[in-house]
Length: 447
Length: 89
Image (cartoon, rainbow over all chains, first blue to last red; front, side, top):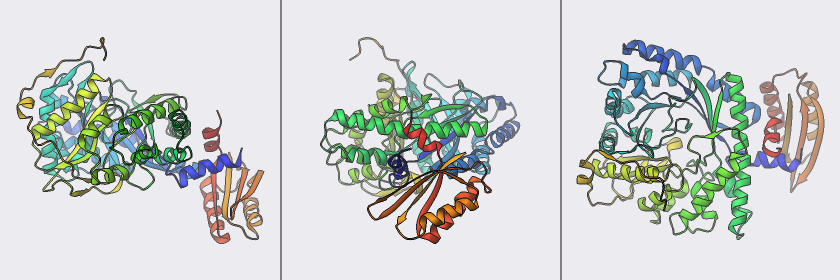
């Protein structure tokens, strides 16, 4: 073993914030369905606390033995809109509370799956679940909610777009942090380990381990060494770095799966930033030669980064899945926050960036008086990008109560802080009021 | 199980002696040693075998960490697999 290779690994972890962002245990709750909601809740609690009882302990033992930080240990479950539909209940807050209790008792810091899949239409439980979101997120700490409102095969459910636009507003009114735990998707994936949008799809095995890696700092440091070189060199450097980062994810996932005796699902090849200095995707883009993220050239830089990360990562692990792409949340990325503050990054530019990377308008604060129809229209725009381009897109925006453009909203921890961004003031009310569905797109004649 | 012990810090008398004595106490066998000075920093890697170790991995890590504090250097031990995984196909 070469001394400099050992030093490289140690430097990546200690100085460049290389870490495993999350080990997420996906747990199917299909066998917990019961017409009596109390009994269903009891089965849910028992299943989660049995399957995940060693998750945190195993995660910590891997951290200690391998010397690589594993930031989050999390759980995703089958969408509760399906599980609770068998009950006669008219709100599902009770289910959110039992999930929250289970999450706390096993020691994880988020649990995703308070979700509904309504890309084509609502079944009985979906409407109740979506209506329960504001209160469920206000009364729990660790539960995350998501709604899938469109897909490339089904088109966009505009009734759900209007509905979730209202729900985002109500969630913001009910609690300050609620909207940070709510994602509205198009083309949602069933094996995503990242919050807040993780849920355990019905096509998944009973219990699996999925892993999300991180490491924007490592990529930035690698690019610093090739300053001024051509994009051929940049792409190659990102690929090689992504390979090394992803190998860590593969190793940790393999060991966690062995120790927990649960099958290993996928590694999500994402570059996920944190608010910490040196852990920013924006700074990677700036390292390619942009004065600040958001300026002209940002979309091209992001396209290269996103693609090279996948190319490097795919060979490094057995199964790739989840969202797999660079995340561009505003509040969780120091470089993005700076760019918004200095006026070079707007919602319109962020929307363009979401056309080529995962996952969407993420952790963006907007003025609290933004109408529900405008939020709905933002959701529809993002969904359109995803549906037409065969990719996952999402909206996680936070209408900030009593705040105006430029004010800061503090979320704390990994969720960071976000400046309130300007939203187009012209209305979309009549557009959203139409309802119905935007048909699925045709897939020949591509241009 | 094999581990990699890394010792990094300002060079001074007794780092190698202190570290290898502690490893001997713990019945951790040293398989290979590589040492260099990077700038002002003393850097040493040891490939070790923990098969007959008297402490578990966690315990050995803790004791080496304590020793590091005493010697004024940073001593860590990691499962060798992490380095193999990243650098070998």
